[in-house]
Image 1 (cartoon, rainbow, N blue to C red):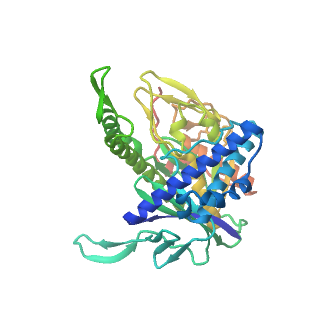
Image 2: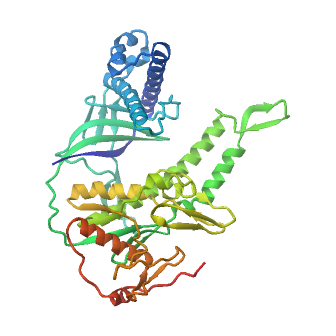
Image 3: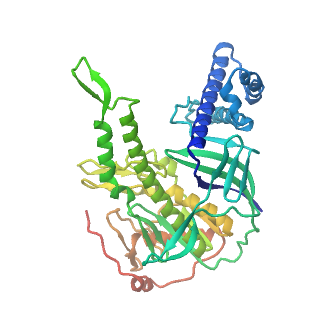
Amino acid sequence: MQLKRALKYRIYPNREQKSILETWLNTCRVLYNDCLTERTDAWDTSHKSINYYDQANQLKEIKTFDGDLKEVYSQVIQDVLKRIDKSFKNFFRRVKRKEKAGYPRYKGKDRYDSFTYPQKGFTLEDRKLILSKIGSVNIKKSSKIKDFWDTQIEDLRLHRDIPESAEIKTCTIERDLDRWYACFTVEIEIEEPNYEAITNPIGIDLGISHLLTLSNGDMVDNPKYLSKSERKLSRKQRKLSKVLATSSWDLENLRFSKTKKGSDNRTKRRFDVSKTHRKIKGQRTDLIHKVSRGLVNTYDLIVFEDLRIRNMLKNHHLAKSISDATKSLISCSRKSKICVCQKSKIFEHRKNGTFLHVSWSQLTNFVSYKAEEAGRRVEFVNPKNTSQECSNCGEIVKKPLSQRVHRCPFCGLVMDRDENAAINILKRGLKNVGQGLPEFKPEDFSKRRMIQEAPML
């Protein structure tokens, strides 16, 4: 069984190579914008549709008078045309499905940060990435591990190796502020998974205060990286808004203008803010990688709720709280607000409270692809009434979100609300795969962990 995977490595080009990479990015960006203009003008003037092959046939003629295009590897240029072609195909697909169309946009200097070698032009030799027309770039480095007394123990490579059996298909060079990365698309061969014997299943309830609640009672807290960096981030954002640009005297108002676009000071401050966001994103991604790897290594069946996260993001009160690609937090207003979202849950915004990003979509995606490689199984079940249904007797026990303890008046079960939901999720997942959950006694849960009842609001 073959799987496609993307492996990302940091590379370390020298000053000359960085200059070449920047030039290539700008050349590809200009070509992308020119192709977009040609397609738009052709349709506006004569209602003619231009495809990839029409524009690819013009490359030879364009290179005769465009010197910058000659310096770029030929297949990299062809991939730019494929990108614009893919953008229009996606646009027409969305129009056909009556979704928000999103016509392809022009790319500014900060909006085009990668180019791709689709087939050839790159090789890996002795921890070096050799790129055609660019040269040999360092792709791996070693770090010396030392103990408390600064005695060297061993060398540690900071990057994982590409599997020897993997076939590298493409290489994408990506720029992230002041860092450069190489992303390889590889095909790996794995054994056919055996889903017949399930011995260690787990149900997972996703949340905001706790990232995960497992059906065995364990919880993974949200480390709140964004909250910890809030003061530092706000300080840098204030500097960005207050920095004065040189030679920017406003004659009408007789004062200096703030943050003149294009000034060196504004660029530096903007980079500082972006680096802080990048660090928060990296911390969050690192946590999700570790949590997902632990789940896949421990359990052979992992069950999540099939949440409509895209629909939940339409709620502007909660969008940034559950998004996997956001950069700022939601600050709640001083007055209490109630927001209703998926699976009949009500999230209450307390005075001066905040909801932090918990990356639900990113977590489920990471667990799914890692489970596929490891031969594990991931199931998604209907989230309706997972918190309201009693996991012992199956009766519906209505309760507000402020009530964090599940108390069943029918069977007497008392346990944490999220753990009760996780057990219901596990039961539904086992039902989907044709396996039952072993019977348990309600008192077993009261012995396992101590439940503290949340105050009623």
